[in-house]
Amino acid sequence: MHSLSDLHLKVFQYGFNYSQDGPGNRLVFHLQGCNMRCPWCANPESFTMQGALMIDPDYLFDNLCPHGAIKDKKRDPKICETCIDFACIQEENRNKGITWSCKSYSIDEIVKIANSVKSSFYDGGGVTFSGGEATMQYKALKQTMISLKNLDINLALETNGTSPKLSDLFNLIDHLIIDYKIPFATKHKKILHYDNIQLKENLVLAIKQHPDVLIRTPLIHKVNDSIDDLNEFIKFYKSIGATTQDTLKFEFLEYHDYGKNKWEYLGLEYLMPDNSEVSKQTVDMFINGFRKAGLNVVFT
Ligand code: SF4
Image 1 (cartoon, helix red, strand yellow):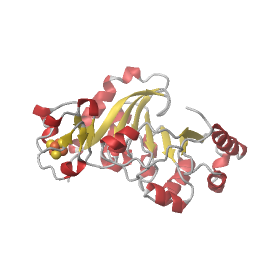
Image 2 (cartoon, rainbow, N blue to C red):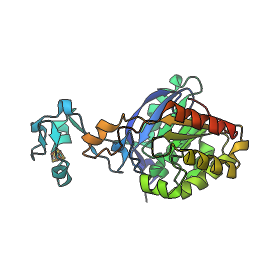
Image 3 (tube, rainbow, N blue to C red):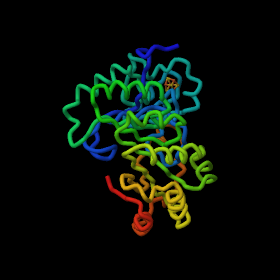
Image 4 (cartoon, rainbow, N blue to C red):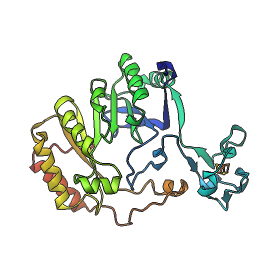
């Protein structure tokens, strides 16, 4: 059994961002690991719990690998799969061309980092935990949140909403941001490789129990941008009383392929078609449809 001081968080990226990850200027920790496999993900290096090799082709030289996995600025992931020494990322060989996606931090280290920049949390800012899916590291996440709350630091969580223990964190979270991507169960499972049953239950709980909830939906052509998708979203929100909640907010994010290179550098295939962006008319259709139904659409 681990003591609390043994708990660590695996972080693949952290830094400041203004307003898009909760209000104000926020220090955002992106936590390693995700249970969904969204094919448009901008952070595919977060998929596995253990992390992954990340490539920067500009700095990738053949001599970084003693096993012949790198040739002409390309890595052969099949050779890496059987690697026993990971010589390329050992201290003596460290190079920008090939790195491990995440680093482990103790709770104390995370708290120290956040506390040292507390004066930068202006305009209602604070710390946001994002992903990957932050709740995949539930125990360490909860304990870190408790420690940060003890320092009176404002906390936001960005989540895909699938953790069965999400509601246990509600009293620690000032701003809860949940993604709800695909309203049809079968399509959700087929495209994201995870069902939306717990997610829908958590949306109900969040709407009933949490005072500050933002539900985000990325709009993606031929994934969730049809009139049927729009109607199904609204039908669900009406059925759970979301249309009568003034404090509940909704936001649409438009598809982009900013993460495409990362997929290739990880040795993964990016399968999103080139025409996955949504038109302005479609975005307007969703905004107007939601607003007509009484749902409070915002832009962060
Ligand atoms: S993981 Fe192993 S095989 Fe792959 S590049 Fe690094 S040293 Fe070479």
